[in-house]
Image (tube, rainbow, N blue to C red; front, side, top):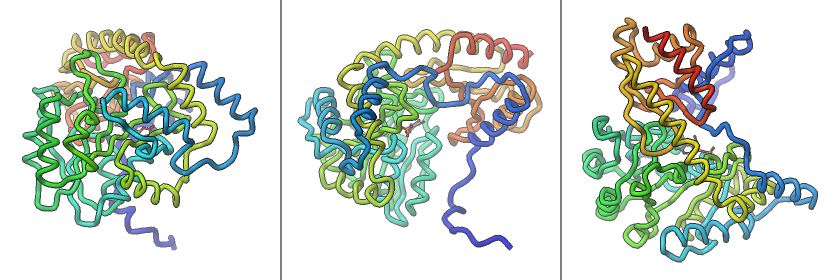
Length: 392
Ligand code: PLP
């Protein structure tokens, strides 16, 4: 007899992302050479300064518990960075650091969402948003963004999704998976809606460093005067500094919100690794120009991948304005191949072309697949060759 597990497990679905990853891993073990467009992480090494700071921290025996919200140097450096970016004066007490953006987001959900609350999530969305909301007892309400509009975040779409039970909005721009952005004028209208309906606004700006046109760069933090303590900005070192494994994420929010999230975190992970915190301080102090350099690399890879995909029949691939994912519409290819869905297409791509992608079903928008171009040009070229052969 199997022992009974927690009923909350029934609230969260198994992700198609994991299904693809497991299949890719299985084939790799069998010796198949997979071109992997799946993972949402840079293929780059962490900056040298980051590595050196971590080694020094280990040699200094910086190996004890730290303050649960993070070491003062890190909170102060982040407060300075976001004060400079937003034009508002942000105090270290308004910064919480934690185990990657994901766990900081989870602390926000656990601290702010009540059972019965509706949380608006624009779709396509990052896989963990709905699941975190459900685990906190809330109900995700999806606001479908317009594909023809490049999945740009618009206030109108958010307004249509409002219900009497809406308590929170989750905004993610640039978006994983679509690369969609949030125009300043739409953000302003969304902020007004949030004030009118008294909503929390969680702004996930994990991909803040990767906006290809400077005119599109925007942070919700610039609306702090409008939003007041409703705003929780979440970001991380993971993508900007190629530091996924170090697990350093953070939130910028009003002191009492930081305190509420810290109450959750203090009974869970406590804080992220002491050594990683020192490494993150070094990223800000000594490798500040790394994200901008990486952006130029991604710009080249973007043009290689999007240019290649656009020439393959069955892929309709607009140029993403941010992040590092292509998110083509593949409905024509799905039909031509006689497949049932983009999830089936992703399975066929891995089985027949040895190319791993993530199907749009994972992000609430079937009919697409996501391909990460945070991978080498050589991989992109080989992947394109295989996709062309498959599509013929
Ligand atoms: N938010 C978004 C939109 C992401 O895509 C990711 C990672 O893929 C995260 C948050 C979490 O990042 P981290 O690795 O810092 O937990």
